[in-house]
Length: 67
Image 1 (cartoon, rainbow, N blue to C red):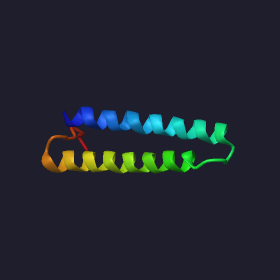
Image 2: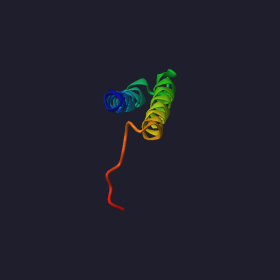
Image 3: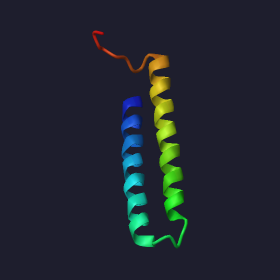
Image 4: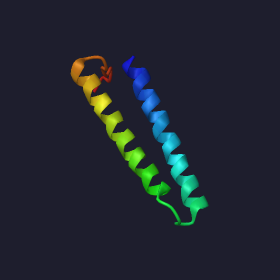
């Protein structure tokens, strides 16, 4: 369940990234939609980082690296 939430958050971040690119090209600086897309992207990235941190802290995510 946690892994699915992390993947969903990453996909939402990518969608926000491309919407910001679209607003950058299309709006020509006439609206604040680009700033809103950036805000959404930063919040989504912070939530994704918090989910990953919580996953490692709770033991739901583990690393199998040999180093």
